[in-house]
Image 1 (cartoon, rainbow, N blue to C red):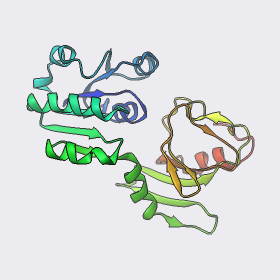
Image 2 (image 1 turned 180 degrees about the vertical axis):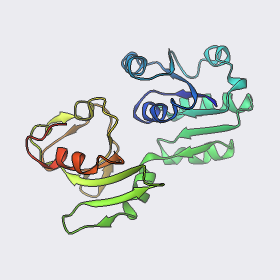
Image 3 (image 1 turned 90 degrees about the vertical axis):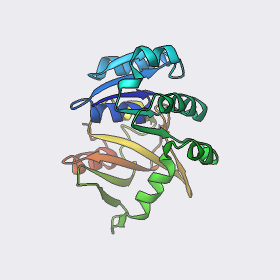
Length: 220
């Protein structure tokens, strides 16, 4: 299938990583750093530009694609480009919803949305609390697992999410907890010693990634 992803941030980038093997993906981002990273790391056609630029979307034959994903951090951008995709009768359209207060607007226009924070809350609600104070839940058919853990490795404490992940395909840091609040991190979010985080881990790497966060001096 052919698809367009607008936004090469954490969600767009990782979605493209997952889909690129079996699908033809075009990814669009106006941020030069995100563009550079996607160009270097992904086997996709990457465009440096604004996802609301209709000439870009038309040039990429939006009326011939099978799916469209708006994954930027701006609901207005996501809404505008999703509406344009809908006008071109794209079969499957999904948008990232950053502010739940905007959900009704997307709903009225018939655009499916995913809110990352609410999704994480649902996962956490299903976690099994273990005696070690770590929580684990299996996703889907076991392709990935979410581990809740405290940062005890001083070699990664004080670093940003981008530095800690270091372009690995083994895990993604999906949330950080401050009291009862859930923070959706970006690449610049800093994880400090003893911070509680939720990490989505690729199957087969659970113990390794657990030790990466909890064992002082452990390196991947």
